[in-house]
Image 1 (cartoon, rainbow, N blue to C red):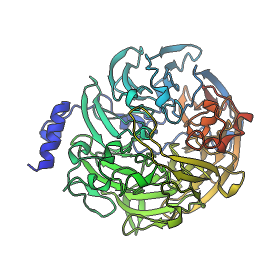
Image 2 (cartoon, rainbow, N blue to C red):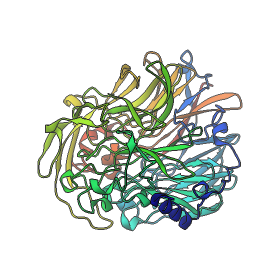
Image 3 (tube, rainbow, N blue to C red):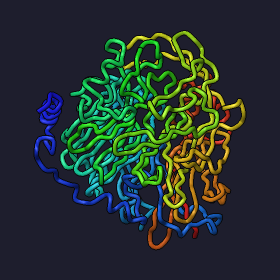
Image 4 (cartoon, rainbow, N blue to C red):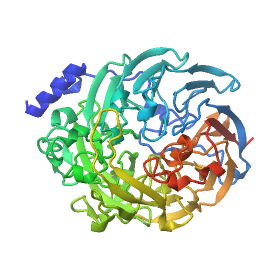
Length: 600
């Protein structure tokens, strides 16, 4: 047995998960989520399916009749902060989660005027002060008669889907250390997989798997640090950029001193899963601090896409997108799993629209880079991604350094696309994405770490690209060729997820509160409705009693609208975001509402 395998098995034994790594078989969840997700009448996984396509085969609402949509019903969430998630529909029940204090609601779709149940968790008031970018949440998960949820104060709950009763709860982090949770869980086999937030507080990122039935810790894998804590095998884990084994302790030598202990690489985004390859895919966030001068080296494995076997736990591969990040280009955005024609062959691929403005196309079996194309025309921090080395060709005068104000960097730290998930239609072979069209000035400075306090070290000012009136675009994009088929310009950043359907209609929302239905072929707006608050969530669609519905949570906030959420006015406040949306309050206000649309 190699040293790495001994470390891995020891770590698994401590956590109670000997599993396949030590020769035992796994119990599976009683219900097959992958099979359930193929039923277009439901929406049982946060991103729609394990592959993260956010596409529905429903077509009752189509490009011929979408103009006749209207509000079917609505419901207040009872909270004011940013709603970044989506409802789930399982059978005749709908489940959704609010922003902090993280209420969960169950609605019987046969009786929408009455809540089936509501769960209000106990809250730790230390959590809101250490939430960097509003008190958001990205929704619940479902499996085997349970609703799984995370809370801002870093707890994970399993609730009885019929009653809302707590079945188990565990602590996944400590707000006193700056650790919070905002992401939606993903259930794979008998495990509930969750991440951690807090990259702006010196938190070292990790993902954790808990047993679905008991809540017992199964395993935890850090983003940076020694192999035994990252659950890397120096021989079997592949560096996607080089296609060679990562080697022993591949992270440690890429940091100055022990800066990796404050290394960021948090995992607050989305997770996808390939049942055939049995690999979970996820990304890690920015290194700490935002001042690159304090942390010489590539800072592996922050800003990285990981593929990890959920049973053996060992990482299959890792691909770092932005080595030695100097711009806060978090790599946590979703990875969508599709099949692509490459050189005459069909390849199982992963497409990832990164904050840094490049859409990466990887072979998801081994992390090999196949293509990397700019999806916003203003991207200027790097000329291109070198397909031979897998590394960005950085523009020298756009690399930031301590006590220097580097100007006109595109995209801004909020990214050319933030966490709002894309959709993919296998028929058109196009991705539909809400994007940002923004740039920034960025000045790092020296900062010292103190537990539970911000560990940022940069002053940032963001502004519209080309100093124009367009801050966002909704685009149809080909990740193989890099071509944008069409684009819709928006006044503010498009922070809503996208939904595509077999009815040839796309749905998305805007920061200033417009919910839109769009012709998939042309980008023509077929229907729009001004909702009570801006939209930073992700629409879903479902069928009930023979009628198709489209549902979306409204409730502006998040980093995009942190000025409105927190009452901030100075342009560099809110980690530089406030100046982008000074006028947003003229068009919308705070407040969470579930909106449901139909034709009749």
